[in-house]
Length: 284
Length: 272
Image (cartoon, rainbow over all chains, first blue to last red; front, top):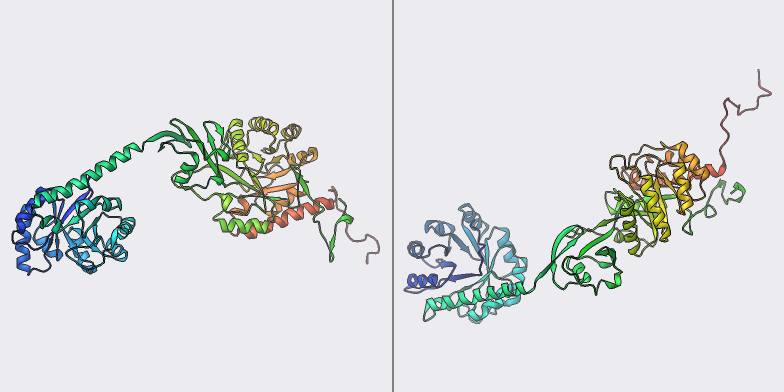
C-alpha cells in the first residue's frame, strides 16, 4: 500500500461522462489535482480497460490514479489503486490488498467507515457533505458527519458532495485531509481554472493554518527533570488539565518552592521555569 | 494493664479498646500498620487492608508520568478509614527526605512522615546520620516524625530525645522476609523507649510479628509479606492474629526462662 501522506491537503477528481474526458482530466491534473478517481463501473470491461489505459497515460506522478471498479481492472490499467463502493465485499478489499493497491472506500455512515478501515482502506471518501447535482433531493450528510468520520478515522478522509472552492475551508476545519470534486471541475467552462481554484483554496487554508499554529507559540520549561514545550501563557491549572491530571491529587513545586494549591489557577508558567509535579503512589 | 481490667467475652479474655497506643496525639487500637506497595491490584490491596484491621497505612510520593498519568492511590483507598502515613522512600540524602516530606505535607492530608534515608539499593539499610539530620529539621518544622532505622538502640534514644513520634527499627532488610534478625537489639530499644517502637521491615510470617509484639513493641509495619503472599487478604488476617497474639502474651507476661525442668504435675502421691 502506497502511503498517502503528503504535506498539503489533497484534491481528488472523480470522473463523470464526457466525450472529451481524457482532455479534461489532463487539464485538471495540470491544474493541481492529486488523485484521479476514474468511474468505470458502468462501462463494459473492454471500454473500461481502454479508457483506463488512456487516462493512465496522462495521469502522471505525483498525481495518482485510482479506478472505481474491480481490483483486477485497476491492476490491468496499471493504476495506483482501486476505489471501492460502500457495498464492496471483504473479498474486494482482500484482492486489492493482495495486489498492493491503494484502497479507497466510499462511506456514508460511521459504521461503514469503521468497516472500511477494518478491511484495510487507505483512505475514506465521505459524503455527500452538501446537496449535489449528482444526487438531487437526497439530504446531505453535513459537516457534522464529516467531523465524526474524521474523529474515528486512522486514514485520510476526503470530503465529497457539493464541495466548491468556497466550501473547502469548512471541510478541512472538520478534519478532512482534502476534498473531491466531480462536475465542479469537469463541468466548468475552464477545467484548468476550476482545478486551480480548488487547489488555491486548499493551499491557502493550509498556509493560514500554519500561520495560526506559529502564532500560538510555546515556552521551554523543565517538568519532573525533563525538558518540555508547553503552550505560552498556560497557568498551572491549565497545564494540569491539558494532561488530564486532577489538581487535587498532586503537589507542585514551582522553581524550588511548593506552590499552595490556591495559586495554581493564577500562576502562569514562564520560559525556563522548573516544575516538580508529584502524587501519592503505592508504597511501603 | 492487668488481666482483671480486660473485658471478658464468654470464657475468652480479650484485649480491646482499653489497649491502645498513641502517635502524634492520636489513639490507635490496631497495632498492625500496612504498606500499600507491591500489590497485584487495587482490589487485593483493599481486601488486605480490610482483613488486617489496620488503622495506619503508608504511601510513597513520586513524580507523575506526564505522558502516561496513573491513577493516584488517593483515588483507590477510602482515606476516611485510615491514617495516611507518607514515606520519603527513594530519598538517598537528608535533603531529599526533607524535600519529599514537605511535598507530602503540601498534599494537605497529614503532617505525618515516615522518614527513610536509604543510600544503598541492595540491602536498603537506612543511613543513620542522614536519618538523624532529616528528623532534626522535620521535628522543628512540626512534622509528626516516624523514622525508619536500623535496630540501633543508641540511635533510637537520640531520635527519641530529638522529639520523633516513634522509632521504627527494622527486623531484617526491607522486603526480604528474613524475620526477626535484630531481636536482641530491638529488646534493648523497647526497654529504653518512651515513644512507641514499631518493628518495620523484614517480617515474613505471623510468628515473627508475634515475636516482635512479645518483646514489647507497640506495633508492626508489614507490606511485602502480605502483598506478595498467594492470598493477601488471608495473610493480612493471619498477621492481625499474630500481632494480637504477641501483644496479648506481652500483656499477660511470660514465665521466666529456667535452666532446668519444672514438672507440671504434682511431684507427690505418685503411684508406684
